[in-house]
Amino acid sequence: MPSNFIAVLFALSSALTIAWGTVVRHRIAGSAPDDGTIKGSPLWAAISRPLWWAGTGTALIGYGLQVIALGFGTLLVVQPILVLSLMFTLPLAAWYDKRHINPREMAWAAILTVAVGVLVILGRPAAGDPQPPLGRWLPALIIGAVLMILIDRVAQYRPRNQKALLLGIVTGALFGYVAVISKSVVDIFIQDGIPGLIFNWELWGLILGATLGTIVQQYSFNAGALRTSLPAMTITEPLVAFTLGYLVLGEKFTVDTTLGWLSMGLALIAMIISTVILSRRSV
Image (cartoon, rainbow, N blue to C red; front, side, top):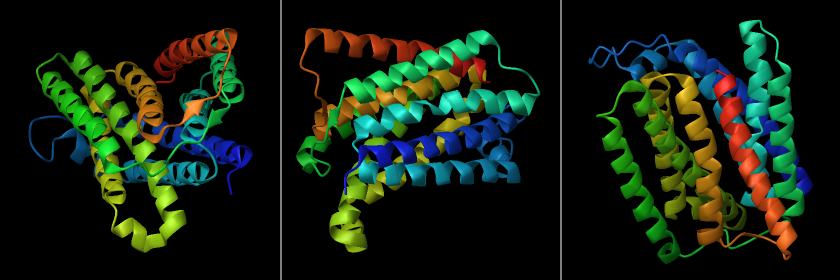
């Protein structure tokens, strides 16, 4: 039963849960050694700590809430709401660090909230086809894979902060694909149940994308300053998801006036700027 109101509630719950998991994993990223051995690698150092599993488990719960939200609403409704995880990350990180949130941070959080509200309320997203044919998916999958592999290869030869930025972009792109494929997986499950999931590529693509995203994310956290990697992954994910939602799923904003589209464009720019600033201040 489609319901954008219920979708928003679950998306907000997901954003809050993801924010807590992000704060936990950020706090252990800086202490990971990288001496070139398997046991000295950032990934091994992270997964060998119970706190990392607690943070990852929390993130998985958040993802489950996101999946439920996608069952009730469109991708173009759920994805902007998830950006508000930054608004929750900020006070959680401040509480964890025993510091106060300054007025500038509160102002940017308010701008982000208003921008997301404009995209969801004024945009009035319309549903598309959650199960598009594979032929519509293939160009997006091939182009995305080539670009992400290329960026990853370039990142390996760049200085640490540049590497963190590039890996953050790859992480955000991977999770953008995961978000869109999740919408298809939810629809397949509702229509055909577990047998339908097993015999469709979307489930296996989702598992692969989520696994790769988690691995690349941990490497990006450890490649350089978190204030470099976090903005990249946070803003790349919704932009990739928006693009795929339009081109592959056929979802769209039902704005039909020049003033409306101008307002949407300004809201998107405001969301990008506030996301970058808040993500840099939340770590």
